Image (tube, rainbow, N blue to C red; front, top):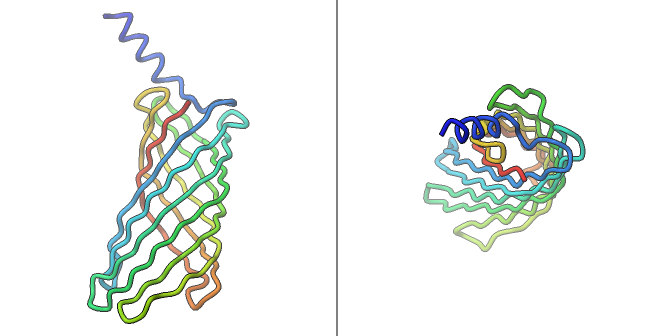
Length: 171
């Protein structure tokens, strides 16, 4: 019993944020938007540690925004692109990170009165977060993201801040 407890404690303190390891991570958030709307946001992507504490990878996100009013506006978007994550503070079972991504965004707008339109754009996002490692390979925690979106319609140059929750598996 003592051996298994000490083995579990040893594996918890050693995180897999070292060169040659992989992250498979996901995130999600729900947002109630002023003006009677709601948004769901889900993300998933793999990354590879090219150096200790520094990983590069690919992210993909899906977002759906629904109007809760009679106008029945709906927006769906898909974002895909490269990402870089650096763990800058490592203390016990906790680690904090900064993440930078530049994504291609495809958005479909639908209105109740006509079929809708599609547009392409780009979005740059910087996130900071803190993760609690439940073991050397599983972590979760809150994140705060700032996004700057460039498009090619009236909806260009949109800035947003999002509070989310992430879950990661380290291989």
